[in-house]
Image 1 (cartoon, rainbow, N blue to C red):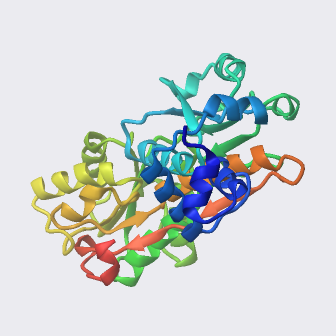
Image 2: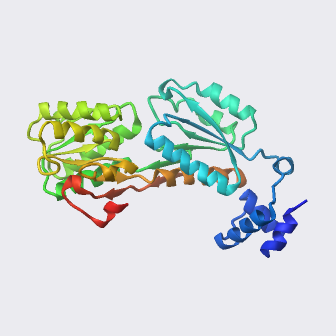
Image 3: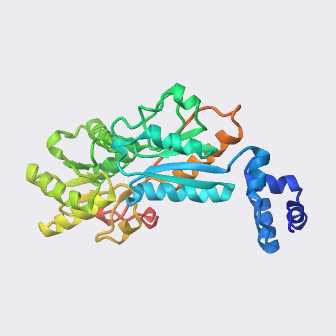
Length: 342
């Protein structure tokens, strides 16, 4: 039977280093990790996860609660979580919430804790009051829990994207290209992210001395269909709009179609900026200027943070990690930049 000692000998390291690589309990350099995984593959070593869990009193399972994985954002975050879990030797226990606004938090958490998970990643988007259940006293009785895409809150560990900064990047880019009447198609405003992007739009226009009135805003539901309807609404409200910042790329797809059908030339008659940098955004016509959030990276950081809280409970302090977005410039705003290949 191939053991950790055989792997260590083949990789030229100590058995403890092999163990740390498999458990993630201590940091191991990328070069050493590569040697160890190469030895594992060549020898056909299979870790005895049951024995390891009995020794460490750990299940090496992390629960991930998420919703709407048919949408780009949640699915991309989940991909990052899965990639980091594989790297650190965790298995995931996935729980899907059909309606995040009506989440039965207590039942979901109780069931997952009963399965002996080492940690929890709550990746359900903040909608309405679906975070209210997580009081300080309840969280003390739970395994370490990391929240993704949530407004800052003392005592919580939160990984999110700076939505206001992303909106500011979009609006300031439009201003820099000469736009002066900038509309906004928002997501549903019971979502925290949608409210943050709307606030970023308002603040950026106010700082530039430009209008940010309600007749420059239409609300969508994140879907392409809603983006199409919202663009028609905006242009009927304000025929002088010269550009639009959209709350996500899916709505931008619908808005592009609506603009073309109305005879608008993009970007000469109407410049558009989306949000998310979905893979299809560069293949639209014209290719869409957008905001890249780094959602895959956010997922990886969430899993790594959960791991740190599990392995070093006495040293771990609740924290907020905010990922800074990036502007990806393409032809929908009339400017081509090297970052458009991102």
